[in-house]
Length: 153
View 1: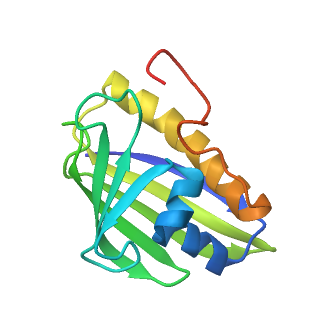
View 2: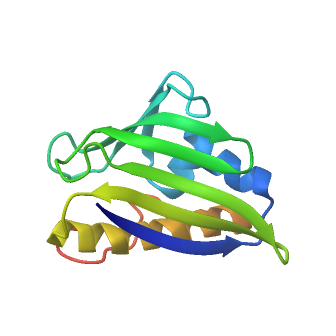
């Protein structure tokens, strides 16, 4: 299995970063404005629905919340979306270093390297920078206002 990994640091509290990862308002502020939930986005068992205008059916991803540890860990499993994503896991590990909240991001369980994986790696990086911006300034760049990286946007 293959993983996408990234590390960012935000000059923000772990509480603020955790809230951006575990509430619909926070997630809509950095990833996609079209974010909804079934259950609680901050509790294991909840399902979060992320949609992106123009994306092929189902138009985004559904993530089941597998595990949360306040200010330390958020872990999801992809339960609906493109075939390449089904069954993969997304995790955010949080720690503090030198005034930064460090986010160790991992999208794990890719079966093979395909062009979509390259695209997703780049898009995850742009969205993680949006998370950084949201937690530091109060304003992120979620879809549809995100950085266009290619013809796949």
